[in-house]
Length: 143
Image 1 (cartoon, rainbow, N blue to C red):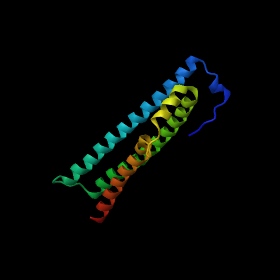
Image 2: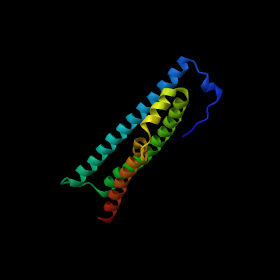
Image 3: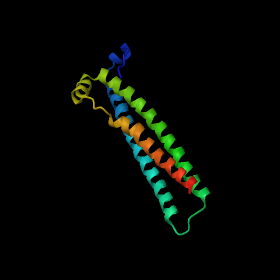
Image 4: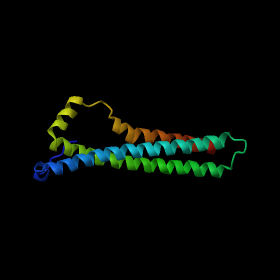
């Protein structure tokens, strides 16, 4: 993502540059914290469904459908939040590439992989979890 910055970003003093860098680091941390939270929450919710399904006293279908629908809604919400956070991070990283020449050199030296880890964590992981919920819902409807 190439970003043309105006003179306001080019003429920042060191404190302002430091705040931009801290904002970028904080945004990266928020991305990972939210990812961890949703992964743990989705795992617990999937475990609850598994435990209920395998127990001797299987609850009514409506309980399963409610939990699975909650999982679907949370996964869609998770995907949206992660996509938005990725957009904000990408924008801040582009600003950092222009404001900090050493950051730009380091990113260029590292190079680009065919699939970015952030892209996989933003789009692929929530899509796979959503697929699990949909398969569970379909199998419940067929049974």
